[in-house]
Image 1 (cartoon, rainbow, N blue to C red):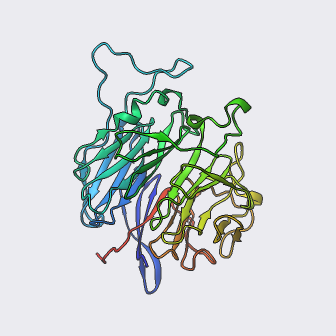
Image 2 (image 1 turned 60 degrees about the vertical axis):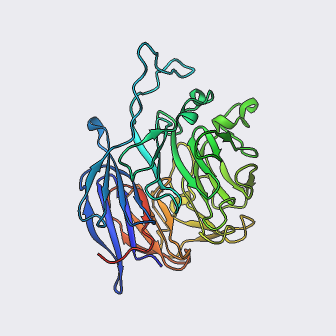
Image 3 (image 1 turned 120 degrees about the vertical axis):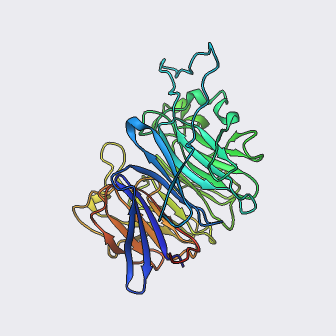
Length: 372
């Protein structure tokens, strides 16, 4: 069972420790700065934090002592355009940005690949590091794919890679709005994997197009990585064949809309979502914060509400705002209103850790963390 949790927020990175007396905030790093993502690397305990500093651009920090001290390392960046080359343009004539606007996802490589990291960005770039983040390479095979210019923003002005699932046989990424992609050769080649998904926000003739699907979050079961779940803009989808085909899950309640999702690390039949009202409102259904859990692969869902506010609540949970630890029993989620809740019984009941944090962008448990 994990004993440490990191919470990336609009105004800093919070570290929480579990003691006999309960969970509490231990320390804060980068107070006042926008921390878009955090990665506690389970292989060696290194901690990475991505910052979005507006005019000063994106920054990347690394800590080898659980956040006591930090060093700045190279942040992913697009290579300069060749001399005389014109910037890529969207179908409506806009020029694609030539700088990274947000570090949206950070994931560790495989256990036998020390130092390998993957980073997804806005606008739509995937980067790979082989030296603990000292340097980064743009994955040109995906960036140069002819369909990339047809991707579009799903909330942000530009498309972005928010989900990266690394397993023993390949890498899967989720793009808003650009679908789900899979590489079986560490990024040398890619194929779309969206069969069975649909986009109800598009004209009927384009609802099945792979490159315009809007997966809000893609997660894989660690023990069975071919078991994938997607919280899509217009519903839940599940795959048991590595994303080759998807089945819509229609039993979720109180709504099929949401941004975040988590799957049990050993049981691919068990998953959690945080439902909300979609599009113009994006708040909890009926003002009630709930988590929905399935234990039968989506055939049925239980609405979990014990310990959560059940009236006049306007909390929204972002894509990376929900996490489950390696035991599959401890979960945490944070919201746009600065609330943070934690469960130690698989979601049956929740305890309030704080109602006064800055808006929460990401929560991540540190696996195997030693006291420090």
